[in-house]
Length: 223
Image (cartoon, rainbow, N blue to C red; front, side, top):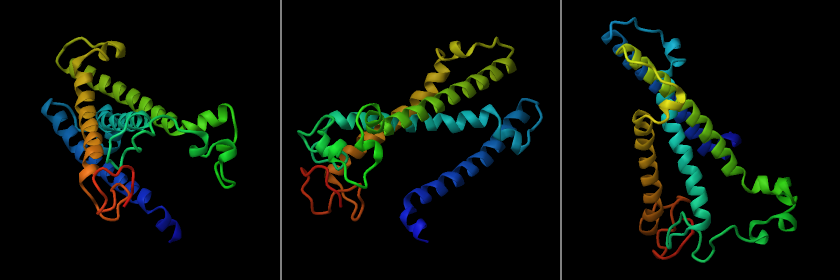
């Protein structure tokens, strides 16, 4: 039970993720089979649908936009500030900050991460490990989404007796960018709204909010 308490936030969202993916696959399978029957083709099994480009595209299309959001916000928050926002550093603290403030090298505590105590490439890698992982996941999900969307596009082309195209050609198609940009814009709106909303609005007890009575101009404090 201690493990559940100590990891409640990640377990809660992990469970929500699994439940929504399962629900998504069930309704997606129904939609897919409806489309198959409308085109005079045979309905497919649930297992086959899970391996189809239809399901893969729908799943990864949203993933890649989420990881892109994390990457850009993590980078932007290093150099840009929003006075009064709980999502921002204090005004005047822009940049990578000193080793002392980041507790690097000789400033690292005894129980700190080992690579934070070291110099050279290991310290540099660990200092950017969040960005490196997010970028890797983004590129992987983007590649998967573009590949499955390309497969779906060519299947539709074949159904209409039109020529298929290569993956490289598909990346220049409006179909691909329309699907990508409709997700990107919503993520950018959400992050920007969060940054400015935390200046004026509160949620008691949440680390994503300032204390309820904190002045609007107070920056980077937690409730």
